[in-house]
Image (cartoon, rainbow, N blue to C red; front, side):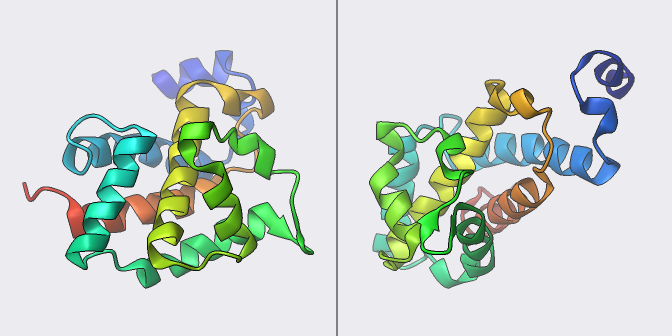
Length: 165
């Protein structure tokens, strides 16, 4: 029923392929579970950084496990020696560590802690851009790979750092 309503009223929704819709729906649920089980029901950029620092100190970061997802976002946001036109649309704010994200995306900073923090800041911005409406500006087009990779990050983080049910 909600998909029918969205198809009739949400710009571009009816034109989204089923796999795109599924990835976006999955992201909403995975983010909610991530926020509940990993972020103690309260995510913010500074609290995400604190979590990454805790995992780094505990030796449980596992940055190499996310290389595939980081490679996707590097390819999306940095090509031919320059940031792509997609990068500004992340809408990074000062609290989102924009300089660190940029340095990781450009490959200048390869520190494991910073790679995970940059990856999570990108997922955080995807979340904010989706939940606060910015992604509707282009009718959610071209987002399948972004949400598929973000979902992989969230699932792996939940497996490694989530509360056991």
